[in-house]
Length: 224
Image 1 (tube, helix red, strand yellow):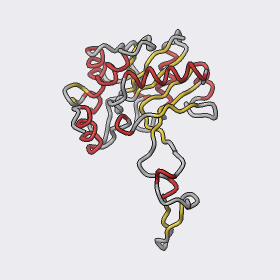
Image 2: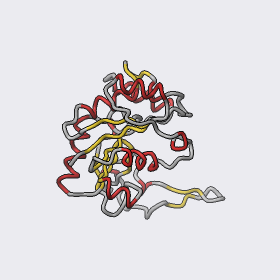
Image 3: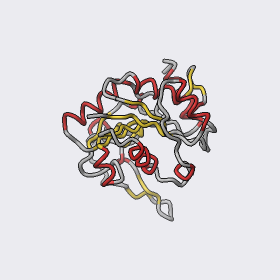
Image 4: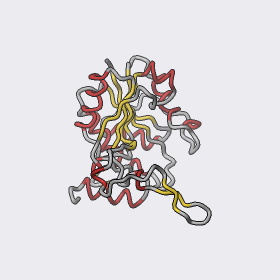
C-alpha cells in the first residue's frame, strides 16, 4: 500500500500569525511534522499543501515535497477541512492512502506515525484517527440553564473518583489516516468503521492559542 503524508499549511493563520513557519524550539513549526513523517518507513512521500510561496519554500528546505500549490479558494477561513485533502488526493492519484498530519501537533512522533499505520494494517480499517483521553470527563460536565441551574451533560455517575469512570477519548487533531478510494466516497474521516489510535496527553498538544504555543515549546525543549 502506497501512503503519502499530507501536511496542510495555509498562510492565513489568525490566532498566531504565520505560525506554520514561525520558529519554535529551534526550528519552524512545520519542520517538526516534516521530520517525523520523513523518518517513518511506512510513508512513501511527505507532501505539503499550501497556497503560500514562503511556506512552500520553507517546507522544501526541510525535505518535504510541494508538487502543487493549493488554490486560494481552498485556503479561506471558511473552507471545510476535508476539501484540501480531497484536492491533494486528486493531484496524487498513485497513492492508496493518505495520512493527514497537522503541523499544529509538533509533539506527535515518528513512533506515533508507525503506530497508526500498523493499526490500519492490522484491522484493515478504511480510516484511523488519533485520540487521547480528555482532561475533563464528560460524566462530570454540566450545562447552565437561563437561571444558572446545573444540568448534567450525561447521567451523573455513582462513583466518586475519576479513575473509576470508564475511559473516554476525544480527537486530538494530530493524525487522520484513510484509504483514498474510501475517502472520496465518504468525504470525511469519521464513520462507524473508523478506528481510534490512542496517544498520551503530552504528545497531543494542538497549537491554537499563544498559551498552547508556550506549552508546546516547553515540552519540545524537554522542560515539561
